[in-house]
Image (cartoon, rainbow, N blue to C red; front, side, top):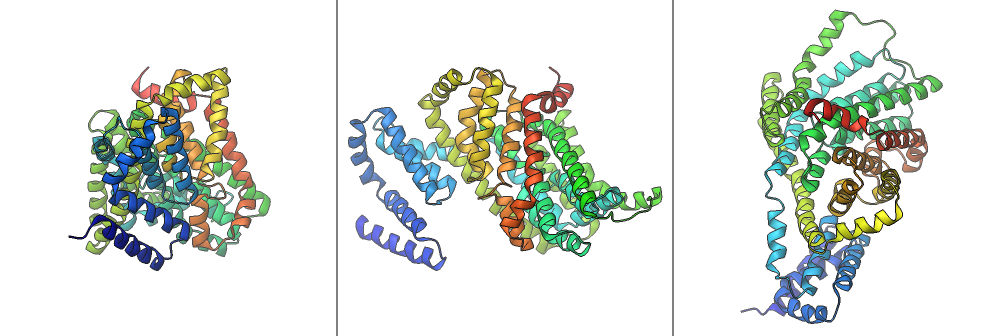
Length: 487
């Protein structure tokens, strides 16, 4: 039999060769090789590390684990691997914890029935994209906003809002609109920079409109009603849509961007554009109404959305077998990435709970922040900075289990804090240097990031103003929830 050292060396060599072929950077290769060595020799390494850990205090072990996780993040190792690495280091150094717990928590964290809503809604969104729904909704948006100053830019914002109720993915929305609308906007005289910024900024609305994946993920991590988050998202997403449309109007009027048409549309023309889009636009109504009336849960709503999307695809005659296979592949890839994050979050949350970190953090923050508004301002500043470097859904792993209990301690409504958190994440996706929306849009349109950032300044100002409204005026996030759910 091949002994463990030889098998480990062979495995590391094969991994290095494979990663070099894939043109992975050197730092990532080293990190992956170290992880593989630890994984293949875990039975030998744990007793050794346990002996070292016996001479350390719990705080020292936590500190080493945190530093290890941050080093992995600095080396641009995927966030879920970094978090799992830090969590594993804690367990390896702690002689009181059986290694089996690591595996158990990693697996059980993904077994919640509520998490099934994620693949269901992702799948429904991909089916919608392959069923010809996007074109029909875009034509309807053109009809609604055709006379507004800004023309196609207004279409861009409204389309993101309506598609957010179907796809739930901001990156997919940005990529799709960058391909479909930006070339047309340039032909009608819009600058490439402005077109790109409007596309990326409007895609921020997607995670705030039900069934946004961010809301489902936050609800599962923080144990908050997903149905209530969906309801609150209607107000917050609509507020962002209206704010952006006003800003687009102001900029377009200043620069002379003309409407799509000058004449008033007749009722017959309006119905002609609404009719093809009517069935897809009914989906968000069915989802929200069904959840609120207790007909089905948020998870079951996702399954219903898939069936509805398939029926539409067959009805329109645009959903082929090839399209179904492609949509399923996209669903598996997207869901796999999200569930890896959830799995890592489960282990990390267990460690935080075991060591009472949220309670200690609460006492620490309360001593510095005299009231909930001071706390919310501090959280906003912190999340805006973090969002510049780390993808929003990934930050939920680390930050939501820490910050949500503190927010409750201050008496902040769970729904308000959730929407403030998700709004911050949405801003981070647009912010340099690591804004995912910015890079996805610029890669499709060919816009330079420096020009993009300069053009986006008015939108950043608008987003901060809206964030302050959500922070200091709770009814914007809670009124519709209280109206529909009571309380």
